[in-house]
Length: 334
Image 1 (tube, rainbow, N blue to C red):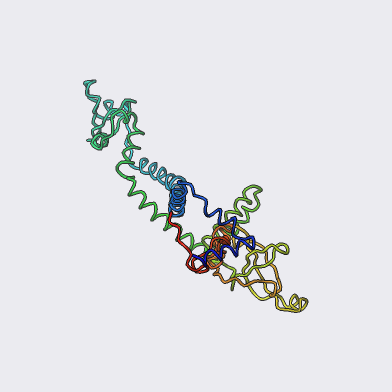
Image 2 (cartoon, rainbow, N blue to C red; image 1 turned 60 degrees about the vertical axis):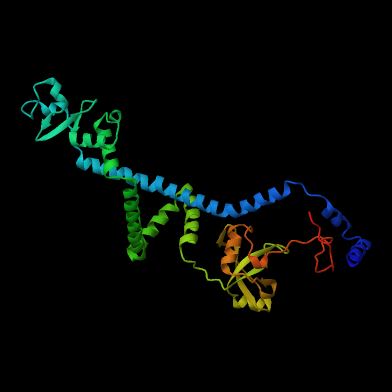
């Protein structure tokens, strides 16, 4: 205890630690532990929650803009193939078997098929109508032949789990053959002509170029091979930027500088594969002990995700002396 008091007095004589010690002695608000626990809980749950939300958003985009049009087109094709819609004139004598009793016109027969009359006056096969009733479809929804066949195809042929599995397999198959086609000479030629047409359009070329950069970065193999990550003063002295060393410098530049030169890709956020290619003196770069993946994460997050080995520890207050620096420091029990 005496040694601890002497240490505090020594710091006080230097004008240090007095204010921090007084701040430390102040009682904390009773909500502080609750607030800290909530913030820690948010820090734990936010990353997986954001990931799940982004994945759900991507699936919704695929469902709305790819699967739904495919489903609607498939429905129209199936209806066109199987539909059997009759009008009342089709059952007049001479063209079929028209029941003499008007009450029997509800279920006329033609070519051995029993039909069901609908509120709009059209006729559909009674087997289809009865099956929809057996599936629990209300009669009020079966008002027209088009409605009957749309509901019938959706309930019988285009069940959600069947369509999701089928369309996913078809989409993967189309992407596979499209990729094989692009690998061939004819495919590359057609694709180059398509891109040339896109870049000629005033508004579309800006959107297309940005989308292409994002897709190339996410899906394509990187074309620039970087050996290590360095920090360079860019774009002015005192301002440091991350860069990827891509190669040694040019001979003429190295001869003019009189020392080794490095070619560095100064990456820009949030697209690490875009930026400025500069040649700088090797002595003016700082080798960073981080991997390429950590550097990419740092740039993508605009500096929010710092590599663990590069995190600067928070400075501790001078008055906050640990038990190792001050012997026999008393422990305050809250």
